[in-house]
Length: 189
Ligand SMILES: CC(C)(COP(=O)(O)OP(=O)(O)OC[C@H]1O[C@@H](n2cnc3c(N)ncnc32)[C@H](O)[C@@H]1OP(=O)(O)O)[C@@H](O)C(=O)NCCC(=O)NCCS
Image 1 (cartoon, protein in one colour):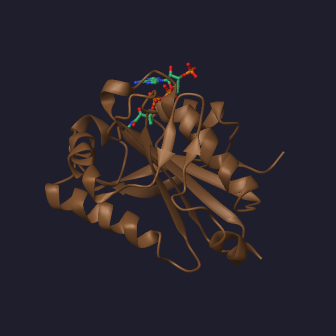
Image 2 (image 1 turned 120 degrees about the horizontal axis):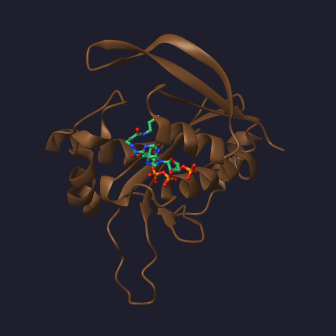
């Protein structure tokens, strides 16, 4: 059933929020992706990055590949602002992703260009993807983890309605150091 739903997804798969258009990445997004993903400020609490140019290329290739998976296991959206009728599509300034395990559970993650922090964009994007996971993919649980020092990410998850369930000791290897994670989760209301 879930697999059939995946196959019926519209292409391109686009989610609209009050201020954002979440769309698939394209090969033309390389410069924009590398612009934010090579910024050290974004990578303090995450396993990846800062990206080399090849890392950014590989990221976009992985995004394209996930669209071909059957059943699909990952959905990565580029965060853009709508063109406002001017016909000019803005470049992506962040990503929000949802991975699914095929058994009803998903995990969400996000990153945003530092210039756009503090404007509620990550919360808006995460909420849209959680809604997509429940209403379109029929998931029954969505989780996320963040490092305990990543206050902004904890706030995003709390604002999205996720609940702190546990602290996972030495959960992620971040630049050679084992770091704890906070595990957040939400089920459909
Ligand atoms: C985490 C991240 C996505 C948050 O993006 P954002 O768009 O700034 O988040 P929002 O504007 O939606 O803000 C959410 C909350 O975090 C707070 N916040 C934002 N930046 C913050 C900061 N540097 N320190 C503390 N709190 C911060 C906001 O005030 C808001 O709190 P509120 O709801 O109480 O007002 C962004 O900081 C980022 O990309 N960080 C690097 C990558 C990363 O850590 N990803 C998450 C991995 S788990």
